[in-house]
Image (cartoon, rainbow, N blue to C red; front, side, top):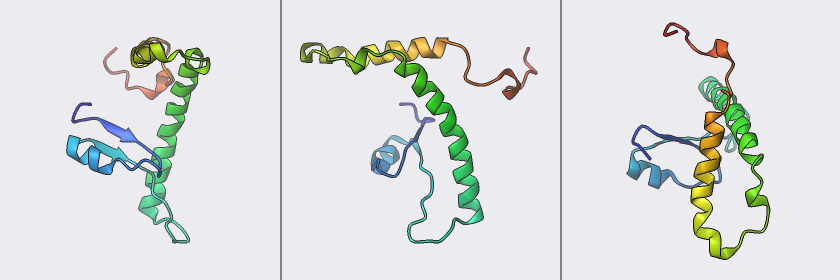
Length: 109
């Protein structure tokens, strides 16, 4: 991963140390942790993260169309799993945008 990369995770992913070592930004929604409600800043951060997660779910759905990993996968071919996932992700990235055209600044057209 590049130093400008960020990872969006949920509470169960304990990778803070690894991200810090690599210089990556870790994005995790705030949790109440014994509080009754979020602060204004936490609520705005949660809203921002939730809106980004919608787009991640859209990409996940595109990837799930490829059902190769839903079938039995021979252990002898396990070393190919990463390459298969890279190809599937590339195909999904070459598809139509998950954002509507009005979400982009069109000054460069």
